[in-house]
Image (tube, rainbow, N blue to C red; front, side, top):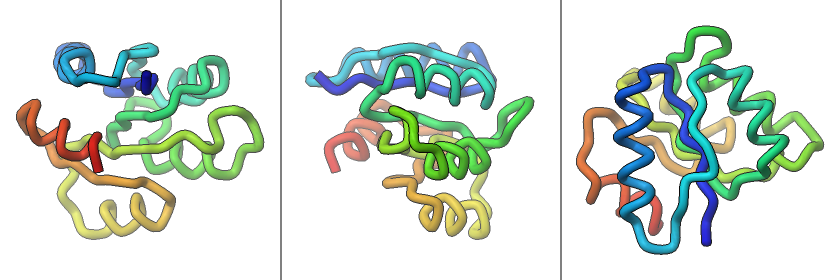
Length: 120
């Protein structure tokens, strides 16, 4: 089973993404958090297989979270990351890909869009 940590500052959006994950065979939600600091803490504590990570968070941006994960030597350093965000700017997409994100999915999207990204 692939454990997924959902990171989004919008509680409703996070809940929707968690439901999408729960409906995807072979995946389960390890946790849901709403800040960058909580994402780093839970990534280290839970060592999930995958983060669904928003770019815009209230404290640390998702790109900063990604950079800190990759720079760490803890259990969260190797976690796969799919950026899930409304940020459409080319700079953010390039930064995410350069920083080690596997995928970049622009909100809003439907469950099949996320499923396709999870299965790639």
